[in-house]
Length: 458
Image 1 (cartoon, helix red, strand yellow):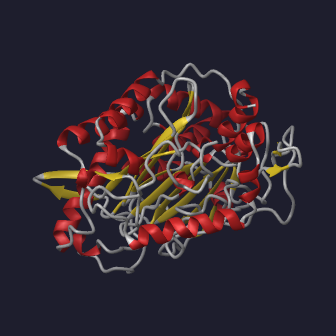
Image 2: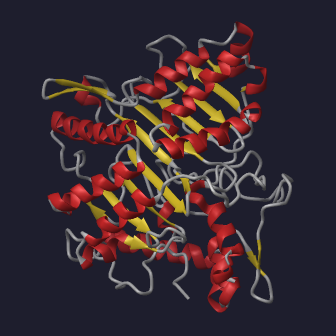
Image 3: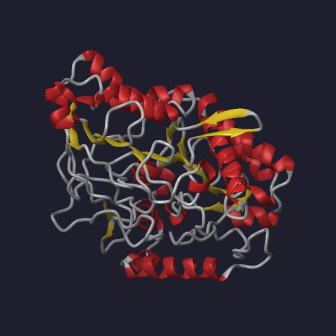
């Protein structure tokens, strides 16, 4: 049986956690691994170690499953749309900037600690995943044995959840700083196979601004274009589940693949500043979601705005489901989309499209169809002003999609654009995220169903 879901590498790979750049595991890295191991076993998952066959695979596929005496596992999600769990189910988000680690088993975003079942199924989507499979295999082939050992994890690994938008966070995998030009090219090719032209350009611009802003404040050790890490989960395959993560300051892409199904979430895009002169060119990023959000809120009637706008005062930070908040519990608030007219619904979808459109066209088409099916059950909450230059926060929250756009106060890169850190929220510092509620971030619900239904995993 492959190793337990502790975030460690596959049993067939070397057990060294050595970073390519240092040749030895850092104390912080080792401490995080030890902490994760303790969390996993303390959670009751030790039962998995004594189970074999189908029971082990099932439990590994869903770390909220409860093993039974015969080694099978009972999924927590309830059938036919009924809530699962109980009032004492998973709590709110476990993290944020002050808590950069995992303290709970994965459950997913919910409105009340109960997941809704029957939202996600294994089925054909006719998405062409062959290019991303080929690009991932080429990327792996281009790594040295040491780099590959530090980069490849099992598909059910907790490493999926160990991402952060914070610059100083200790990451695993192989960093761009330690890759050759040829290896970087293969990494870019992998992103290009998964992302649209806009998505690829967004990732490149975030990195360029990070470098230029670091130069502006004289701290390129912390802020540069190469402090981004690759990890791959599983083995690229046309039939078996796998995926990759690209993780660094203000930029996180999680990409799960199962056959022709793709789950591209959580994905985090942000920047400080959001626009900067670089080599005589104005480089702007995170503009689409800001413009789409303002277009939507200003399409509302005064009566609708009174329901949607929670407060006209914007705090320095409002995001609810950023890093380490996989299990956030957030009730529906604000304006429900079933009261919107056709034009307003289109503008609401425009906010979601700003994120979804960063994936390949066929993936985006499938995702938007999923969102539209549940649009009338989707809510929008707004905080802040509605003028073109206003700082604001918006949350689009439905059964299958969660989007947040958060204009934040100037942070550690404030000096790059003449601002004072903590001086008040601004469009010059934006954090934004897209998630898949009710258990399918990282494709976890599809992964669970795959292990339950695939004959070779029984």
